[in-house]
Length: 452
Length: 175
Figure 1 (cartoon, rainbow over the protein chains, first blue to last red):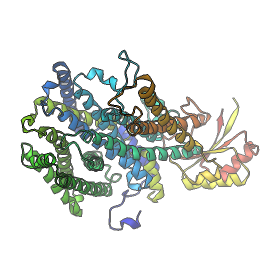
Figure 2: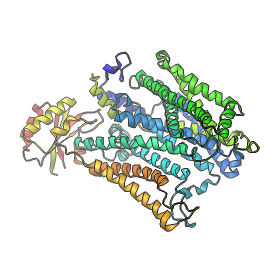
Figure 3: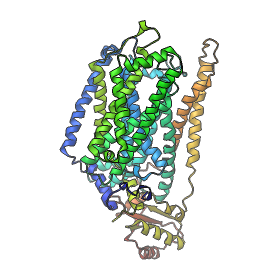
Figure 4: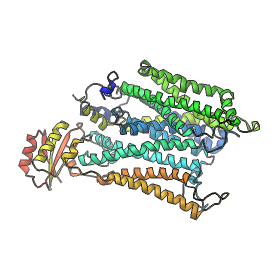
């Protein structure tokens, strides 16, 4: 890759040897001596976990009326949170699977935590449609199970497709992640000194011994899983977007949604990768393994995805006008000047305005600034999903059925609770599993001749 | 306790490849190599057969898609036909969506379980773990195993050859 990036920073910095790489990455987990601010941050996240548990309990006890949703806008933050989290998950799969297929060496040191991010984001996303059901304890009716009602799910409904897509995505992500972990778990098994750690990693490693025969099969199947995950990502978010295209409500009836949602997913996902990676590389001093090159490339992918999203905004508005349908046009106008106008313009200024700063290399390589931009994009993308969910139903065909919804403490309790839970899971992951893929970084060091 | 083989330890990946090639030229066939990361060069030297797992993955994908499509078809045509305004019961386009997801799921499970089964994992113990030197603990050494069942195997001779090929250490492994 050296020729492709004559003036860009190297993927790995400095020279390394194998004991150093596996020792450094492994010791984060095995010594367990994590800096004090790690545990402080974990404690703050844990408070948010408690908030999530309280909010969910309240929601189930009181009912969905506790949220701000009301007729006619009965889809609210539960749905926008769901789309937001699922989108964040997609960048993780993209980094680990697509970049593996394209044989991009820069993925090696960030793919593990990107995959972990996918898993935890999907876990969070999965909560919301269930909480939104009103009677969450009946969610299993979406499954084709023999039940006392003697009936089947409605196969023609996007909600049932959604269930199939999310369940598949979560399972395949877990398999792909675990398969990538196997060789590293074997490293931890052998490096562990305490008996409980040896047992824990030993059982998880399934007896991996690094035989050349095993590696050959392993690599073939790992590539195949990556090749399966790539169309899966596209299909999952397309199916999510179909929830918003199968109705006839203005704003819920557009064929642009599948590609536009997929691009939005990548934009918010890469923003979340940066939001996690920038503090991670600072806090654990792995700046020579997760280098400026990674940050720079992620920022470039953000702007690429962001421009597609901007194109999505433009074409959504254009086709509302070009359709000639007065209701579609009225909905677009109301989106820009109606009750949700402040949110709409905030969204545009964050997702299309602030994003443009990333064209400048000096900004892409300024970590505090890049972090701020990534957080701003995360906020902007959440607002985007909220706008899509609420503006359509709020401006229905008849002005008599127009109405808005409010946001209550419960909406925010569940949103921030889920963010805290996500980060708490990321912290636990950093504590108990290697956050950087040991074997791939070693392979990279070998190929690049960066060995002492 | 019978002898399982000889384990030679190398510090560098190049040394392992060199040694594996050397031992092959001397006629050894029952060999295995162990490394902390995959090494493509070993595939030819150790005559690692091309894996049939891609076919397993394909079969898993087809099985998943077909089974779920059949389930949907059975439910709408036979078990619970509901005539909604004369629309066809077997309205296939929406069913393809679920069948596609099921196909991916089937393929992923086939791949994951297939690679474990083909590699004989999970496995509680294996003779190579009896070697004192065999461990990732000191961070990525490279190992060459000559099995005692190899027709060319002669205790002293093989050990000498491995040492001459640059092994840091040669160890006997009990089965």
